[in-house]
Image 1 (tube, rainbow, N blue to C red):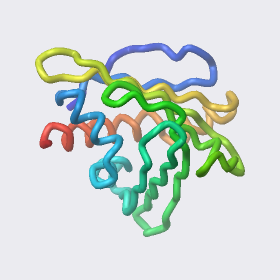
Image 2 (cartoon, rainbow, N blue to C red; image 1 turned 45 degrees about the vertical axis):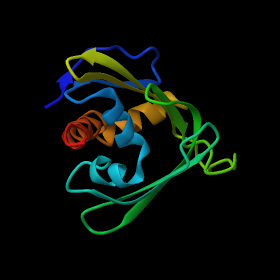
Image 3 (cartoon, helix red, strand yellow; image 1 turned 135 degrees about the horizontal axis):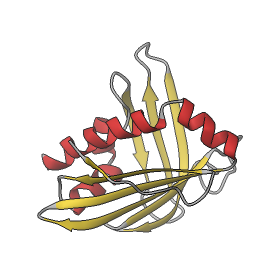
Image 4 (cartoon, rainbow, N blue to C red; image 1 turned 180 degrees about the horizontal axis):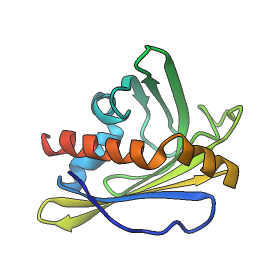
Length: 161
C-alpha cells in the first residue's frame, strides 16, 4: 500500500494527494500515459475505466471514460498543458480537444514524479479548482478516498511492470 505524505494545499482552491509509491518512477509515469494501463487503475473500484485515449504531448488531448457499477459512463475529456516525460504532467478539463473550451471547467491537475530511492516514487497530485465551491464539491464527491484508492491501484499495476 502506498505511503501517505502530508503536503498542504497551496490555496483554498487546491486539493493534494501525495504518496510514496513502491514502484519505479518510470513505471508510475507509464501508468498515467499509456491508455492500456490507465484503464486498469484510474477509477476507484467498483467503478471501472472502459476506455482511455491519449495524445501525451503539450496540447494533446485526453479522454478517459469512467463507468459506475450500474454501467453508466462518465467521459472525462481534457488537454495536456505540459508534459515533461517521466517527471511531470499538467492537464485540465478546461478544454476538450484542440483547445476547444469545455462547457464547465472544473480543475487543472499537476502531477509530479520523483525518484525516492530503492525503486520508489514520490508522487504528488495537486488539483487546482476554478473556485472554492468546486474544491468543496470535489471533496464531497470523495476526492481523498477515491484518489487514495486509485493511488493504491496505480501502485499495484506499476509494481508489476
